[in-house]
Image (cartoon, rainbow, N blue to C red; front, top):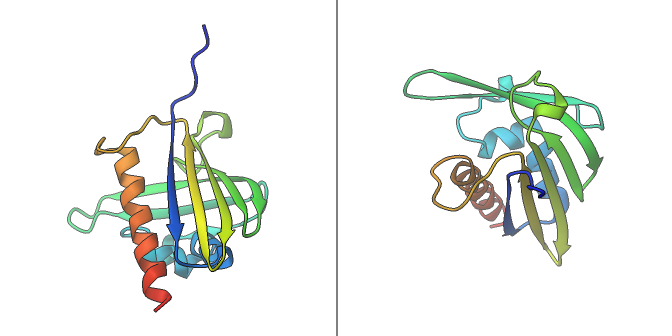
Length: 147
């Protein structure tokens, strides 16, 4: 009997070209604009295969900090970004992996967000809902920028 790793996928059609969506994921100022409560000064990126990233989300009510980071496993500009997601210095083999696939559709982009290593479903009030809400922020930001 084989069991598959826990995983989920969220797909969005974004009102921006893939280059714009790519920058939203890979540039500090852009990421801080849509990632909840993440001060730009806490973000560091080395967007290349084997490069690391980290950021800190801060609970505005309690001041509690959530350090997040990982390693870029595959980087194909404007098309595909694969990275571990979790604690900044966690071993790669123990970390969940995000695969972000961007496909141009005229002036829009189909963005497929796939997280392997966590189970999730709509309404779980945990990882799926957290990412879905965060991706809603990205979608709203790109929509506002296109006006």
